[in-house]
Length: 386
Ligand code: DP6
Image (cartoon, rainbow, N blue to C red; front, top):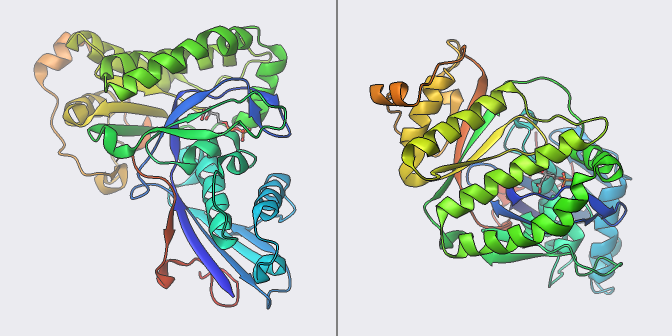
């Protein structure tokens, strides 16, 4: 019997991936850049067991059994097995896969990126594969290829039809910019959304803006973003991040029918960030939104408490929500807002409960193999532990 357990990070793009040039191989129209987030706060975890005693292949995700025939899962498995030594004894044994995210799916974070990066990293360890596996993770979910590395990562779109050169490469490790923090504001919103996969498919078919973005805007932005990260130039980093998020959502509106992912609360967060940056005379906070209303705010450690005092004023916590459940992740001191902030920023509080909760985290390392047997999600018989 062979068993492997792995954790992998969520990543938040600062130059967005939106649109495929090949649906089957998951090849993007443009390069993208993201940071992988610390797995100490939020992560996906996967255990895979191969055993001659397993009668069939099985897959559980967040406690629910899934269809093992899922095309994206099968593609990852097929591509990993193609690469391994055919003499491996456990290559032909059945496998049990058990995955879970330690953050609620309702958080609307790109759980598939962390999930597929984790699955592919665990499979690579199980079948003893070396070398790049980001192009395999890409075939699970495009953005998953960036979660194969820690720190700051670029997904190169590649030019080959085979997709072999559409891979992620690190720009800088997480230790490069240790002051970088993220506040993820989970917006209370129950509406069902278009998935990224179907939204971007409609964008490619119907948006004229998307072509301009992929061909003219992104290549320059990628260059500028790489420089901003390498030089740790927050002001420039923030401007490109916000502009790129806004352009991505402009494309969503240019899609027909439009896929409107951000809502009024998201817009109120955007306004609060711009007010703060204007007052400070430079960009101190950057927002970015994926395919949903939740805001991911990049900011330096030195700004967290002050900016959080503004967020807590503008978006008061619901009276029945305990603080321990509302503020998750890295600890922060809760400062009261300064009176002159309220006046100078002309801030008005919204009704309580617009935000579900807030996660405070930082940039972190890539996937890790966990060796302690208590970390495994599967029992010796191949069934989930709980
Ligand atoms: C808005 O990677 O989830 O988060 O490749 O179809 O699985 P598929 O899409 P997915 O799209 C992520 C889109 C995004 C932007 C980004 O992370 O770059």
